[in-house]
Image (cartoon, rainbow, N blue to C red):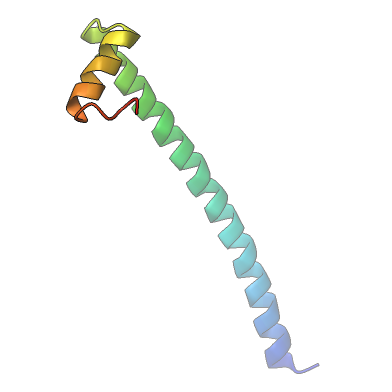
Length: 69
C-alpha cells in the first residue's frame, strides 16, 4: 500500500480518537456548567424567599404573561 496513504489514514485515525475525547470532555463541561447555573439560580430564589408559585408569577410577569400559555 502507498506509504503516504497509509500514514494519512493512521494520522486521521489518531485525530479521530482525540476528537472523540475532546467532544466527551466538552459534554462533561456543559453538564457541569448547567449544574452550577442551576445551583446559583436555586440559591437566588431561596435568598429571595420565593415560593415556586411566587417565582412562576414573577417569571410570568417578566414575560408579559406568556410563561404558562
